[in-house]
Length: 298
DNA sequence: ACTATGCCCTTAA
DNA sequence: TTAAGGGCATAGT
Image (tube, rainbow, N blue to C red):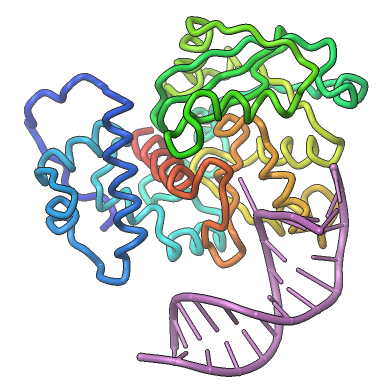
């Protein structure tokens, strides 16, 4: 069974602490990825990471709404294979929500527009961006936007140059743009993006897609994959009318500037394996597991 | 000359 | 039987 009995009458949960919670989640995912041959039990994971087992469970539950076991099951290759074959969401529990209609209620609703080829060719000439940093369920995030909507999301990791690295990753895409910092604006936008309770069809998130024609077509196709579902690079290629261009699609997916909102984490290899992610495979796994939790709570 | 692919083929447990 | 790894066709930047 996928859902474990979840504690009844549990003591009050600590207040949400995304940075600390994600740090532990990330450590667990990394540990599992390395030690999966040994099939470590929950107790063994807790011991290896020197965290009390109860705290491990509580953190996962607070962060994703799932037990660690359910979370980890949701991101195995077997599970991915099955959802690919049947077009199912990542978690059995989500099935009763249905494959159409109601399940869309739990999507992050997005309205997008593409920037004119002129602005694109000018490498951002004439565009002014605001940006800022904020906590997110997947670590410290950089949000970047124009007056038309969100233009980029990046993640700040020690390993990749921290805040500077994240900002550089965005600015180098539009070297001729103007950039001004606004952390408050970023926090407000991050709240709308990363809190499922704030996802409302009547209040869609506005985003701008700045890229080549092919890239924009691929990114638009990504937007039609519902929360908790997944597709493959080759299926995506057929979808944009270039059935043999799986690899080029992979490259285009990899250049998506608005990670998470444009759900490039919902694309896996044909065999169900997580093949790559600009912001690290661990984060991709975390996003897929977290989304399984969003559906399970629906 | 780069890819966040996919397929087919070995080889080693 | 499976996992891992090399070779190669492929298409867009």
